[in-house]
Length: 166
Image (cartoon, rainbow, N blue to C red):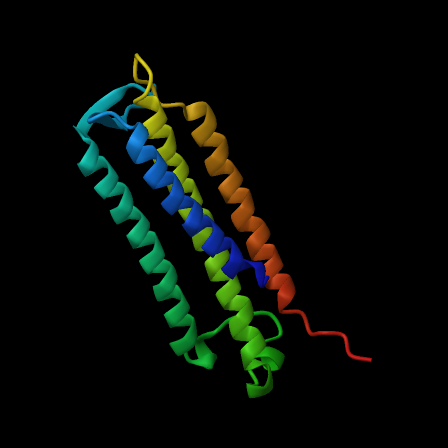
């Protein structure tokens, strides 16, 4: 599960790069909201569109950091996990925190990636006439994120097995 921190950093850097790249491609006036058919039903200036993208990213990052802080300050008696008698003793505290932290970073990295994909698809929709949002990409991406979340939860639960010792 230690890959979570690396995944989060890579996704964050990718989002920063992609947002900067898309800024130069985007038109001055952008469709910013789409109905169920993918047709635009809300518009805003480019600056406001990208400001909202950055605000959403900051909220996701902030929630990810808050989750990390909550893990650190939550009393051990409130933590419910498999084999808690083993993992909640002081000798295993560092491994417990590493597993929970990595899970949080991976989860919020995935959320940030899906949010970025939505903004990316919205920007690309604005580059074509007529403007049309591609739900054929977004819906499978959301389903993929749900599967990714379930796999992360499985791996997190599995990481709390009692290690085999010789």
